[in-house]
Image 1 (cartoon, rainbow, N blue to C red):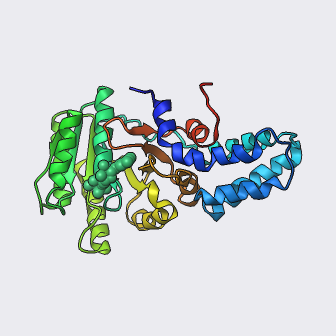
Image 2: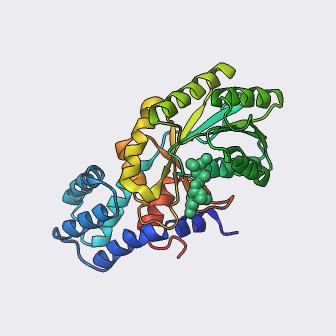
Image 3: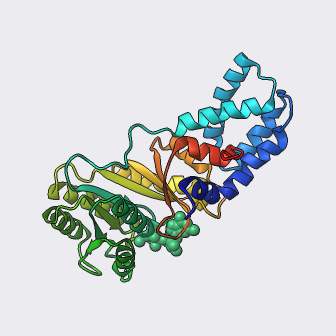
Length: 308
Ligand SMILES: Nc1nc2c(ncn2[C@@H]2O[C@H](COP(=O)(O)OP(=O)(O)O)[C@@H](O)[C@H]2O)c(=O)[nH]1
Ligand SMILES: [Mg+2]
């Protein structure tokens, strides 16, 4: 099994081809000159960073280039990298568990972004670390939803609580937390629906799940993870907005980074949503969820080979 760094680098291959490799193609071995700004700007735009994020990063980099007057073009890339790392840095570690048990995580997002898959991967990872995990099947809108989560629960070797298709999602969340408390579990992860009959109904349901969760256990949910599909790039950010207005999202899971060149969208998320990206999905397997690390991420999209 390849290590975290190899998996991250592998998952971000297409993004690196669009960003790092192109920048190196233009900059490698060259002296810095101001007409290179234009090439840099163009490459960043094409990587789907968005106007605002590109301007933000380039303004900061420009100010430093002005002061430091680097000779080599590669030195400018190093300055840019530092600003990217700053941008995606998070405070503390939202992935660590709360002091008291159980910690409750709620997973939300548009249908098909990878919520259920992410819940399964998180469960596996936390169980591997020795925690007792219970899953709540609160996507009761689709007939097959609970079954899909059950498959992940058995793969991950954790328990699942559900009431089947059509049940009240908030009641499922409540039950799950009560059962997990009784069994002295460490972590509850609640999967939710991404689609109901209409958007406002979905948002009402999520708000209710959130509220009832807090009634089952004071302080819960401790984290609300919003799952965004990286292949949707900037559009995904627009979709995210409605979730942000409804539930207090505390961190982002960026999925499907494998097979897209839009992995730079993590920078745009940090800048436009001001919510940290905390996890990256790089495949469909149990092991394909990587805790986000700012330095490693920037090195993976812009860098040469760290291992070299
Ligand atoms: N390649 C890839 N596929 C993913 C990833 N995460 C989820 N998927 C796939 O996306 C599809 C939808 O996932 P699902 O978890 O059912 O989404 P949900 O509707 O949000 O619960 C499934 O086919 C998953 O295998 C990822 O990180 N990479
Ligand atoms: Mg699902």
